[in-house]
Length: 305
Ligand code: PMP
Image 1 (cartoon, rainbow, N blue to C red):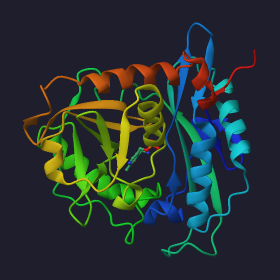
Image 2 (image 1 turned 90 degrees about the vertical axis):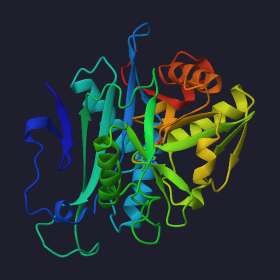
Image 3 (image 1 turned 30 degrees about the vertical axis):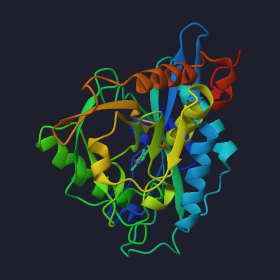
Image 4 (image 1 turned 60 degrees about the vertical axis):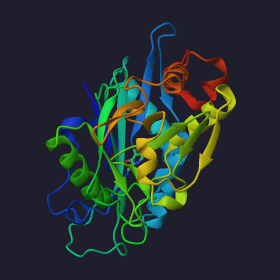
C-alpha cells in the first residue's frame, strides 16, 4: 500500500485529498519540492538525495510566502523516511512535498490563512532521455521575471510559465524548451537549469538571470570543478552562444543530467552526447545511488541497518 503525509498524519494515499474550495488550488499559492530517492541493490538501501537541502529550500520558500509551517527540515526528512518505509519502497522513486493554504476561502492573498504540508511519492522513471539526449527549442515564452512571479522560488503558480513553454516545445516536435529571461538572456528549461561547454570551460546562467536556484545545478558545479577539473563560469548567457557551444546539458532533480543533442534544429557539437557530459553523467549517477563513498554525504539512508 502507498502512503502519504496529509494534514499531520501518514495515511493511505487514497485518503489524502483536498477540498475543491482550498485557497491555494485556485491561486497557485503553493510551494513545492521534487526529491529523488535511489535504490542501491547491492546495499539493499534506499537513499534520499539532498533531503535536507530540498526541505530547507521548501521552508525558505514557504516563509517568503508567509507560510509558517510547524515543522523543521529534520522533521520533514524523518516524515519522508517514514512514508518510504511504510510504503516499502525498494526502487527509484520521486517524492513531492507541497506546502499550501488549506483555508476554504476565495481571496488571492498570503496572510491570515493556515498553511499545511503534504508529501507523497510518485513512480517517475526517467523524466527526459538521459542516454540518447534531447532536442530542444528556445521558447517564444519568456521566463517569469523574478519581480513578477519569483523564478527563484519553487512556487506552483510559476509553473503556468513552464507548462506554456513545455507544451509549445512538445507540439513543435521537441523534447524540452529553453526559456529566455525578460532581458533576452538564457534563463532555464521548463524544469531544469542549463549548462554549456565551450572548450575546456563550463558556463551556466548566474542566479541573477531569473532562474531557480537548482540543487542539482550546485551539485554539478561541484562535480565539474572537483572531479573533472573543469572551470565553471556563472554569468549571463546569450542565445547565440547555444548554437556555437561544444556541448549542452540540462540539470534537475527530475532531469538528472540530460544531454542536449540539438538546439533550434542545429546539432550541438557533432550531434552526439559530448565527452564531458558523459563523464559528468557517470559521476552523477554513481554518486546519487551511493556508489561513491565520498559523496554519501549527499544521501540520507531510509532503512535501518
Ligand atoms: N528550474 C526549474 C524551473 C525547475 O522546476 C527545476 C526543478 N526543481 C530546476 C530548475 C532544477 O532544480 P533542482 O536541481 O533543485 O531540482
